[in-house]
Length: 270
Ligand SMILES: C[S@@+](CC[C@H](N)C(=O)[O-])C[C@H]1O[C@@H](n2cnc3c(N)ncnc32)[C@H](O)[C@@H]1O
Image (cartoon, rainbow, N blue to C red):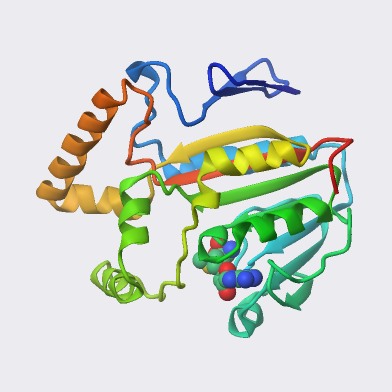
């Protein structure tokens, strides 16, 4: 398997080793024909999980870090022998029955031992941190050479990203009630450092390669658009306008989730 990173075309090409080529577009898409509007969230999540597992093939003693593990894990590694979960919430940690070792701590500050994990998963956590870069650097140094960081984050450059960033926490609570979610939202910072382009640049500067970058529309936006004609029409109109004035450089604002796989190079900075 190999991955090539073409800066000019802003694409990552990943050869999955089975003859099939995964072509993953970053912040720029070359033509509307390849514009991945409404790419399915669940399907994208599965593709990313499969890709992460295939990258670890041959490694039968996988040590996993779940950063901000919460009460459940989203990425399964059948070859995992030991899963360490770190979370700032005691309540969330207590509910988690999937990790073997629990650390009550702040992923931005907790000193993780150097080069101890084969893979770190940070699933919908970075948006809740005031200093996401500190958390990223902490996870970077905790990975072995060749180790993977699997990240899921809301895409700040999307309708949901912008609305969440610009509205207060009480509005998020109301929205959860309105959508009849049983859980409560976590306070959100959505710092600019988690814009996918920026995260990838930081990773590359620290000696990581971008193996995969995918975007997908989440269930909440899809549901809102389907349920309320006006919301769908406003989103579609703004989306088309932004696409037009940016000459296709800004991708669909409906793609409100981003999935990344970053791999630590042999000579990465620790
Ligand atoms: C939206 S939940 C995601 C949980 C889990 N990763 C998932 O996808 O279901 C965010 C989690 O990040 C945790 N968290 C927030 N700030 C944190 C920090 N500074 N260090 C570690 N965990 C943190 C929260 O307690 C919460 O469990």
